[in-house]
Image (cartoon, rainbow, N blue to C red; front, side):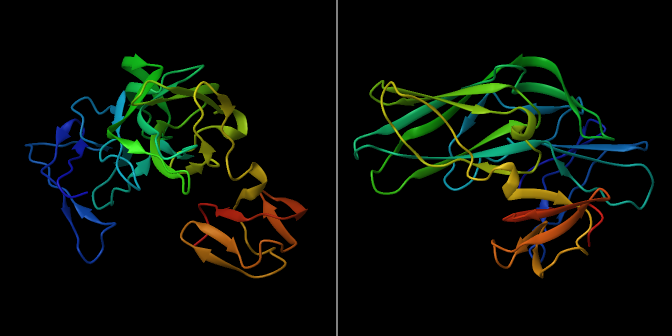
Length: 276
């Protein structure tokens, strides 16, 4: 966003200038005498070419806080364009109140296995991240003046976590009048946090002292990664990085890594890297 900075090989850029005709494109300038290839780029800017997953995130309506979702990229030769890639996944959580008298003050997320906050080193070839400094298995999410819940419509908030597997994570919701609800969600195997992917959970209703599991709206069968769309039995449309079925009840065949998979209905098909 406007005013952000990146770093190249540990050197900070000037504040970003957004192209108004193409908001997905931005221009950064780095003032330094010499920069040697490869250029290793991280966002937000870091003098150590590491990325930080913040131990405290703050509520922003309908999105997540600026600067909490690190990205990386690299170029090895002159003339290449840097393409920044995500290192984090996003959780979308929605909650209602049993009445209109509940205000959420903060949420605390704790991993069962691994660190979710601190400084991480980046493998610029693969996007793998490794815990490095000031690590924590706990992250706090603050709602400022508070998120007032409604019994009619759920209120949503977005939490950013590093990509990877962290076992069974816990999430506590604390209200302004000291009530607590205890939630948990899986982040292992097919439920791992995926870079650049928003995982949306079904809405829950706050209940003091209750313990409950968060359930994602989409199962693994709802999304399937493919690299060849030529075997689709019926047509579908391309929307960004997704292949979206015109009819979610279509019977279809897809080719995945050279193996044919048939007779399965998918709501969303993620397009592989080789699909234009």
